[in-house]
Amino acid sequence: MALYDTCGGKTRAGGLCKRPAGWGTDHAGQGRCKLHAGVSATVTHGRYSKIKRPEIKAVIEQYQTDPDPLNLLPELAFLRSVLHNYVDGNGMPPDPETTSKLLAEISRIVARIEKVKSDNHVTRADLCRIMQEMGRTVDRYVDDNSTKEKIRDDWLSIRL
Image (cartoon, rainbow, N blue to C red; front, side, top):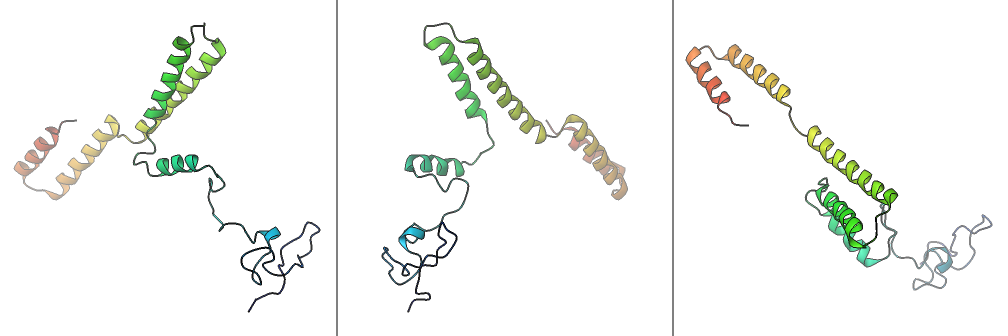
């Protein structure tokens, strides 16, 4: 039995659709009519849910499964190859404006890569501070000077 006898979808005039529930669909007697999303596919959500071309959807899915999505080195290599191809490829002198735009974008990607690297690395000053704190902790909890010296010697032998 149908929950409602009519479609009930919102009309352009602002009222409710009076067509029979499921009119023009394969679910006659239930749900919205074909004019009010009764024949649409299931609702999908997300930033790229409206993309219809399967080849683009496949590329998006490939990028979503990338194990290192923050690695911008492939984009940098691509832009450098585009610049190289542009400058050397067509036999004509390159347009300075286009060349400078490509160089600017390459510089932006290099800056992003450097920022990611610097954000995720411990500086030498931070490392020295950490080692000093570790030494203080050892001094607090280890009484034997021989053991303290062995710990310090081992720490100093760590190669960076």
